[in-house]
Length: 248
Image (cartoon, rainbow, N blue to C red; front, top):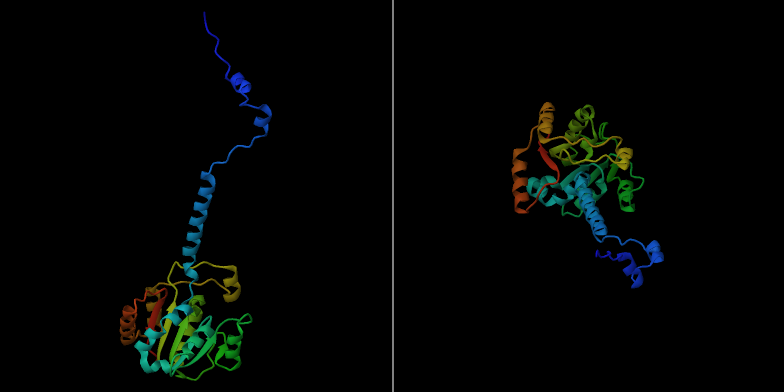
């Protein structure tokens, strides 16, 4: 005689282990793998955002980092310094804290939202707001050393041909140029509204060729002293640094 196969559904009902109403209203359990995966994806995106923002690093901040190395390279030429570029108030404040150093700044862009300390420097005439596409309001060789950061990255070659010689004109001992590395940039809405155009990061070979076209020579002596001081200080540059001789 053949045996009838037991109905498993009936066993569940008889034992009280199955309820039709409960089955209809019960919610499926979510796998713990899903939230863990979301956390991992979020962490990866955050890390990627941080590293992709490396182009937002300000070379004006870099100037403040390397002031001790610049003093080693230029010595007495650091007594009368002009800084040109965005956030010049911070750089000038840092320079003024150095012994026997006078400093001035040129801010190429609007400073309506600047802090009170920056507006105070402008009120005293230490910092000027001026469009660097036009001649600077200084006499030739007014400063021993001129430092420019970030500002040149926002200029087209047409304006660079005018601005760079003008920066050199007001320097008696040298010009130090800080520019961003190629590939490290992201055009932001705030950046475009302030600077009018995204930064153009150019390689060192482009800059060297451009300097030669404008009859500007690199200052080998200053380069050597700067690199020696930077090496002892375990300095890893976040910006390109060029040391140029003044016009004779």
